Length: 242
Image (tube, rainbow, N blue to C red; front, side, top):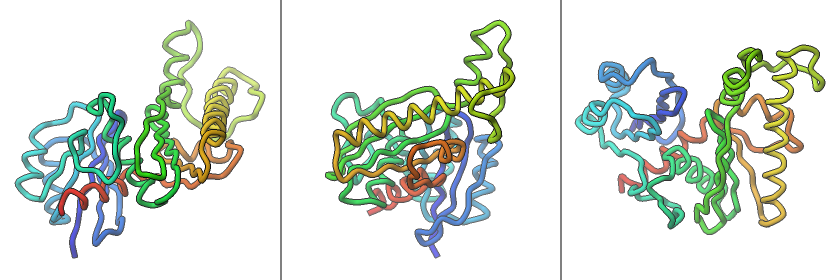
């Protein structure tokens, strides 16, 4: 059996997915990026390959550790990819967005795919049927909106995400839940409709830790996979190991 560790270091959490013979096995949420934490995963799984997608300033020691124990690849704008990237400043594209569009293009070849990542930010990532990552958009994510309402007003509380809220809120907390979550759902519906008007053979994918909060509030049901970024990372790792 061949094992690959796929690390996703995002703005909120550091995570690792384990793949064995190409199949997703499990996800680990990491407490930190210390060498001992990474070494424990290496000792547990004896991976042949590893890949890191990071949008934060992580501990550089772990890259040397992974390179010494596995065939390691750090995802960036110079990586070999099975999709092309926008010509304007490709070095500014988040590694997480690259992984999402690679996953979409791999799972749904021959389609125009809009991948919506719902995490610290909402990212809209469009890859066409020719495997060209065109670009997309970025807007504030759910937690960012909750924190902004609290930080930039005198009296609004900091609200935590909750499934249970009415359309018309009956107190400050439920007003914020309704406004933020239904407002984001309306934003997503509007952007999807704009893409649908422009592109035929069109497909939408949702991913990210917050995706589950929105699926019930969208006009249509879309393919949703919380592990989509890992599947893209695995494809990229395999592609760079040829």
